[in-house]
Image 1: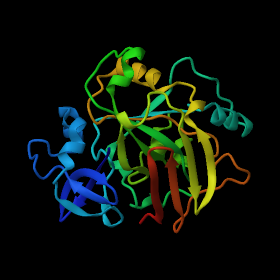
Image 2: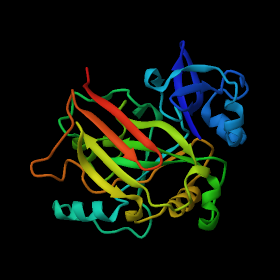
Image 3: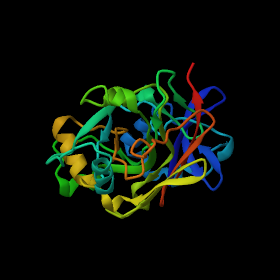
Image 4: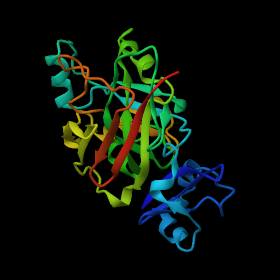
Length: 287
């Protein structure tokens, strides 16, 4: 099942993508006003049943998409979590040791935008870069989650573009300043529920800029797998429904090129993940 968040007639809604249309699941559930709350209730496991007879809000290609989870409590992002990307960083002359534990940082929810919504290139930057990633959405609350139990906490998967404002990322060793400009993180178009994808399945990931493939890899190149990321993050803080773990990007980012390749106003970036879908975002100039 594909679950998504969107605006309809001025209201924030969530629903299911059935064929080429969106059916509204939130209209009859005022007690569960957001997709995160729907997931947290466990009712999302019955989404196929709930979709039967639900009102249709229109074709998918006409929606105003929101980030899949519009206001996650936590957006946890893994750093240098693909071996091919780690080698790319070394080849570009930046010395980085492999960490014994997953390096992570946090994004704020205002930094995110939905499918087909514009990523804003801030006026202070001339180095906006793409990072196609698989996003994991947490389905139930947990703390100190054992690796062997981690898959039970996954509600589903989505596409993520952890777009990076590189000058600001490199201001200091802590990179979060370059990862949290408003409207720079694409998240969508929907969440594919975990029952659709076998735990640990290797998924092909492709990022395109203006139709040209810039990243082509698969999730089998992760250094720290999804259970390890869930175990590590849940040791630090309680994971709650709607939390997001962006699992890192593979090789092929723009800053490592000579000369660097960046995104500019007028460009279109797409992140496609096997069995999940394609996230598309145009690039616009910031005011």
